[in-house]
Image (cartoon, rainbow, N blue to C red; front, side):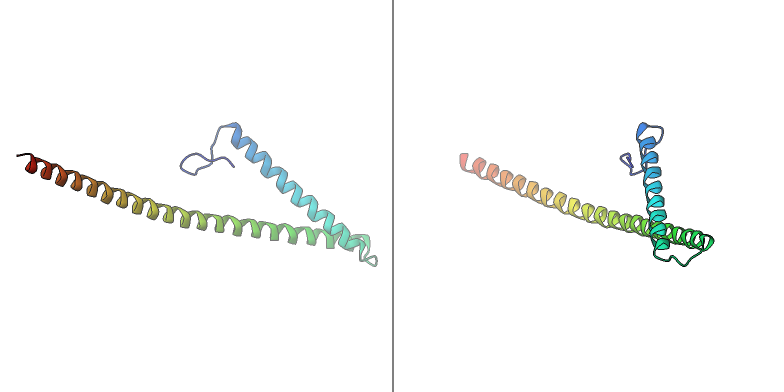
Length: 124
């Protein structure tokens, strides 16, 4: 999903349509994979009647999709946590760098002032 500078999803653009289509295709792919796995499971149990096999397949697909949703939610939650951690660390590093540059600039200015005063004193 494409986001703007503030981290919010862009709306009203081709990017949001593309992201929505991608999400649909991924969801459809997960659903088809779950159905395929359910069919394979039922073929390993030839003693099931057609109705039983359909019920087992339906339950398997439901459980598999619930598991996929839980994994995606936990991944999204962890990504948000990592983003917050990285942004906090970035702010710390940026502040430290700014302080170091300020100290360096002050040191250069002090040296230049001292050197100017010394040259002025010696020139008299």
